Length: 229
Image 1 (cartoon, rainbow, N blue to C red):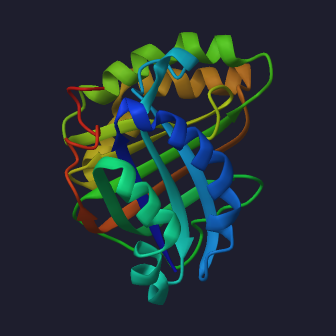
Image 2: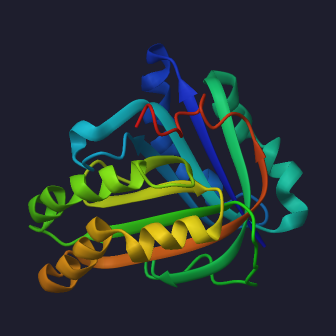
């Protein structure tokens, strides 16, 4: 199995197409040969995780799939349909290093673990408990500021399955050491971890790290950069 992440940038005239495909492609992805897990994702600037943070020009999805299906999936109707409407495309092939927590009541990245001294991707995702959104939103800005200023960060983008309550981050790092420095040494990040234990914001959360096997497309063009966030 392997994890594949796609992100696309689209023009304003294709925003209705994106909303339509977000609704229709969910089942199509799950029925694709070799796919074990699939999530359609809206994207945001990753600054506040409020609805106003949404970026309607960027969309994507993440799947776990059998390795022998990578090329077939890349030529599938779902992918080529998005590709035909996009201005830029970003694709990452990822091998899990470690994954803790749950996404839709399961851990989709708990298969054969990898190690690397090279570039890594981190995916964080949380289901925010009802009535805890405002507390969460107030705590987020210092963490995102710390993230964007972190040494070794190549790019980051907000991701979500819905405008409210299902939020996460997709971030790309020069090394695992850079990611660990942010996660364990950043005061803002440590403060929000402590606040999480106090306020019990999440009904479900997941943190995963991945070795980068291959990246296709421009990080900057796809919106995954420190400047545009």
